[in-house]
Length: 151
Figure (cartoon, rainbow, N blue to C red):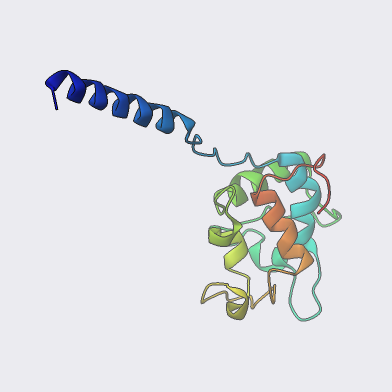
């Protein structure tokens, strides 16, 4: 085959490869964690009384670990905006946006049989990923907002 034909074939292959690589999808950017969803829905999970467990808040209010929630004043039923913002900053460090299956916030209190990790001194708050409270946490990690349609 003449050199001119080889060069033309090589150029055609290079152009085809360039065109194919430009069609590949850009890597997905992780979703943004929504503060308003956190404040109204996620924090409610931390205060929710469960039949067989203490509320998350009981052990995690001013705890000495990575999941440290702000202490409520004696007459408060929820956190004020300043406290909620601090909770948001703290809890945001425990998640991998877009991936609840690898986030400490959702794995740590999940039963081992449901896919959770080995140790949580507060017991297994969620028997499975079907638990509505677990699903609320997962929705936030996946980028849910208050304007998102309910699933």
